[in-house]
Length: 121
Image 1 (cartoon, rainbow, N blue to C red):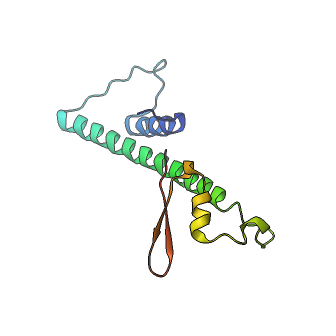
Image 2 (image 1 turned 90 degrees about the vertical axis):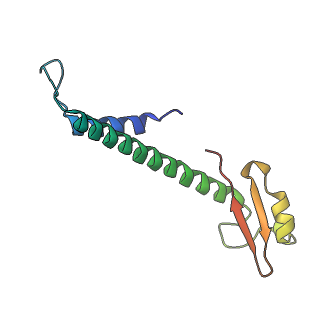
């Protein structure tokens, strides 16, 4: 799994904050710890990495949802009126016309339709 440069920089800054960020060229830095201290440091680093990765995933997912929603609703005129070619389409016909790349699935209940959006990230 690749990590974006932004996520790497966030993790790097966090790790430097935990260990210290004195320049190596100027200072001779030695860190002493026992096994439990090292375990805690590694555990904290892993949790930080997971949090950063999950935040990045959530941001990408939100972007994809916004892009998908914008493309699905392109048939609505920004002035408030509907475009002429969509006036006669029912919801089932409209759903058949949605591009496959959005992977929209329609599930019909007795009173209304529910749209489920599957994302590729």
